[in-house]
Image 1 (cartoon, helix red, strand yellow):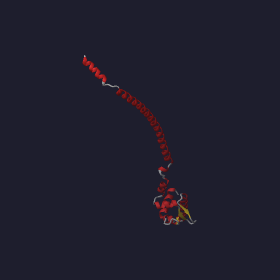
Image 2 (cartoon, one colour):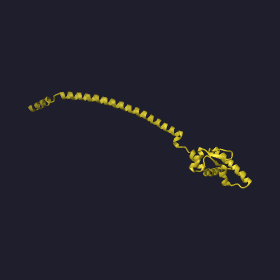
Image 3 (cartoon, one colour):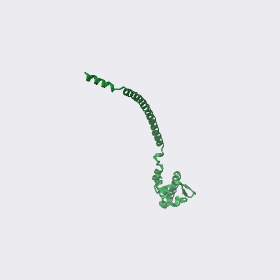
Image 4 (tube, helix red, strand yellow):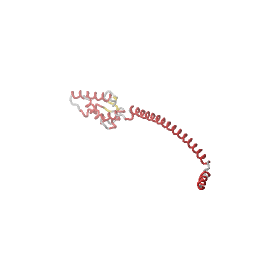
Length: 173
């Protein structure tokens, strides 16, 4: 029996389960196969064994008794409640969220590292510019003080007397 056939019977089995704690794989599958001859019964029993083994290996149900009575596991209950086929349920179960992957954490750490390096070098360049501007400010302050002193010296010189003497001397000629 192929996996595809087993999955078909698993889907039928899960859909027909009424009680999560006790169900008979034999009784449910018997309704679908309905063996009439000895050969069909042997084939039926082989199928039941394979279905039980598949269910046990995939953690869908666990046997309670040797007669074929089983109990659904948590995964089996989730499959039953999801009302999806086994293949679709397994795809959803295997699908992991992108943000739970390791590469996402590494990417975030790398971006933070790049930002930190950028801030370091930007801070250094701003510090250099600040020092340059402070020295320019100091030199301009010194020049301003020099010009203030020279303006005050310039104001102290009396210009009123000098031009009038020239005008008077020109007028006398």
